[in-house]
Image (cartoon, rainbow, N blue to C red; front, top):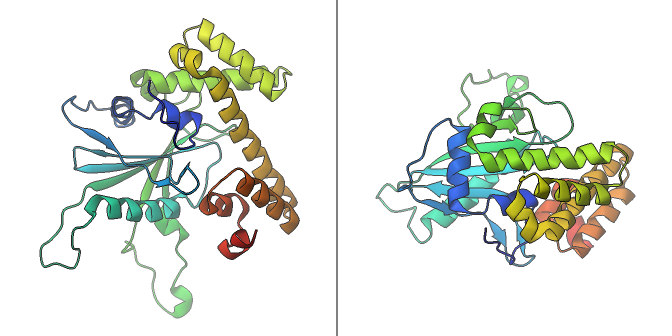
Length: 280
């Protein structure tokens, strides 16, 4: 498995960084089989300034379908709005220099949106979040809310924790192995090991039991560092959510800036406005 080291990624993104892997994943999510001759083209948004990814994974299937896929350890109720912003930028990339003001109608691929959840909080196997759920009611204006909003975006959420969505895991071996690896880290941490040691032990265990074996043999240390950073950030986000103090949010923002995180990412985890982030 080739790794693009130019941009910072999560463990999940590195695992699913190849077209053929995404073909298998999409087929599993939709209980179908994409023919091998249908091309998969990855078009994930990248922030060249901060060497970071803007969205997690996006790709085109046969110039007919564009798929946006996010991996989350906590469910973000605003994910439909985020994906709306992302799909607009991806469509800009797809049409490139075509003239949207011309008299000729352009053709664009249909979009689909997914979130793969593997957090520790209980969550159903499947769920759907809609953009329209965020809309303010217009009834206070003396108007009736529309039964069918003129703008809608639906995000399909799948729980990929070990033991969940078994049919999907059966069809996508890499996804099931990833879930097993994360479950093993949590098992060792729950048994009393500090997080860093739990990750090391989980990597050793999975290599010995043919779980992500090749990937972990080549990138074990990198995987441990990346996962440690990700999970520590999850803890940091929870701290400022719990404490609710501006000083905490600003401190988190400063640390994120020092690590080269994008303004968008910092805004997401702190809730600070862009001007405040820029001033730091």
